[in-house]
Length: 343
Image (tube, rainbow, N blue to C red; front, side, top):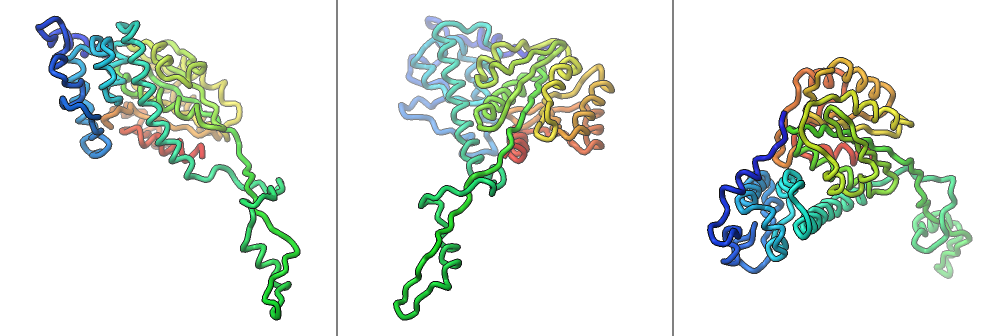
């Protein structure tokens, strides 16, 4: 499996003839816009069914316009719409970015991450986190006053002549919740065929790393494993430290992941790969051992912005028999699984 590099060659062939500028730069057309001055609507969100196709079209346009030149021009870079397809292209071209282009690339990625984080945070806030801890006395403040219970408990003090209810005691709601810190270990195959998944899941790990009570660890591997936990909060810095390409040996990643499972019941291990391994039996047995220990083990096939992916059939059947079927396709499926466990 070799690293993906189609974007660079395509960009050189389609360079504009006049002065080497991107096509349309002199006519006021934005890289992903229609030539109008206003902001471009995100049709991928308005019409989810065609979102992946729009992303592919956008990626093709960026490649033909020479992404490095677009990023080096602050006016053009400011009109790029942050999207997964654009981030994937930035990763492929990261070794050629520097100066203004690198700064603009970071800004685009951070804008995208902030948008996704805001959506996820809204979803998480709607969920109840932890059980009520009744060992902690409720705070006696007005916002915690349980009016219905107070009235019910004091009904015997009702004075029918004066039509008044005399309250001997106020009752308050318990709001303190018992929560247990959860550990999330994300292991990502960074071989050449997994570039889309590397982008998706690095961003996802950074999102969960910013949530309270979630301890995130991030490991990337091909034939060697790299612990990226210190940079888990910053997806772009994490991606800069990856090296796409080469073979795949999940056993080296397992050697880093296993010691991180200190409390299995409070740990979820997400393993993202197409599972085309050469030490199949050894790797699967160690994954099954994690599952049997009580930890939540989630095998994830190559997840892409298009929702398409492939998984080794041997591993797919093994995981199904184990009771941990492979999640494959769109990244939203993984988000749902993690939200269910971590909130």
